[in-house]
Amino acid sequence: MKYLQSVYNNDLFHLFIITSLVCGLEFCTASAFTYIPPILLKAGISESLMTWLMGCGPLLGFLLCPVVGHASDRCRSRYGKRRPFILGFCLTIIFCLMLIPQSEAIGQLLHAPKLGLCLLVITCVLFDFSAQACFNPCESLIYDVCKGTPQESSCFFVYSFMTSFGGCLGYLITATDWTESFLSNYMQGQEKLTFIVILLFFSITLCCTLISANEKIYDIPDEQTSTTETNLFDSLFLIHLLKYIFHSISNSVQTIVTMPFVLRRLTLAECCSWSAIMTFNLFFTDFVGQTVYMGDPSADEFTAERLRYDQGVRIASYGLLFHCVVGALYAPLLRPLINQFGIHLTFSFGMFIFALSMMVIYVSRNIVVINIMASLSGLGMASLTSIPYTLVMTYHANREIYFVDNPVIQTRGIGTILGILDSTYFASQIISSVIMGYIMLIFKSTLSYIVISFILAICSLWFINRIVINRHQLQELLRIEK
Image (tube, rainbow, N blue to C red):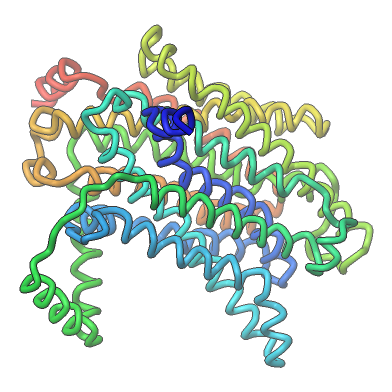
């Protein structure tokens, strides 16, 4: 018992438990988004419309993520600053996970197939937004818990490992063929069984994070609670609610537009890098199913074309699985590599390998080679999920120096700064979805996904080498600009 208690009290172990929800979120997005594009295509939605729908959730995130970050900074709930937002997003995710695989059945039950299709689209968009926006309060919670502790300098490298590990588990679930199993037959298909597994695993990680996070609790006087409840009641009126939403979004956009010089450079590099990686992650299974295996997602059930497509999606999941495995193995090496070679070279190396992988995938039709290249692309993913957040921690800790050109941002909490960074992540998905929607209409080839990923990765290398990494570089750049 004493041994178990000593393990639990270990700082690193405690950090792994706190970041377990990040693992669960990545498990959700990795496994669910392997199935969501094929589910939408099988429901009769066109390829170009599907790519545009995949941009709706990120659009909501782009507009609202800084609002969520700022609201969590100001929150004085007796349950903590971050956990109320985490719980709200997670309950939405759970609701969507239950409805997505049942949308078609609900439409048939009500004799309204169009209603089932609308329900599928709405829940997919809502799931996309909630699953990715939830990372913001999780990142802020990690920062709050680790600030001023020995784990402060390494917390986001653990975060990167946990995201990659969650992706490993998610893609392993989707890559496993359960079609002949008893559970798959009982649940009427592998897709429905997978969503149940996702739901159970996600719920466990949610409980681990909410229980283990030693967040500061604020005592709220009765008078303040009464005032808060009155204001909440007033805001239920539609006109007040619409005004609040419009005001919040306008403030969010203004915050993004007027971001400090150092954040602008960092977000440009992150936006290009995420655009490349998200285009690959979202559409890789579709590319393998159609281009490599010559399948057709719109073909009738049990036809040769449809079976080839489904097999391609399943085999491509192994590529995404090892993409996450490589990312998880590479994440612990990032800190010593940065100490040895610096941030610019380490970050650039990860994205260069990603670009090289895309080039090989474009010319090859050997699924083994393609999956090996998909695995190596995980180096870029590991760099992107750790280095920018580590830089933001440095910026925020010395905000009077790094945010000298924006006094307003100097007064904001870490949630707002991370919200700005996360908005570029959402912007990258919007760019990918919109670009791919038009490109698919023009070229009608899934090879376009790989070409765009390669071009964006090459562009990201230029922006990465413009990132400000220390105060001396910032002072020199500001002097040149003046």
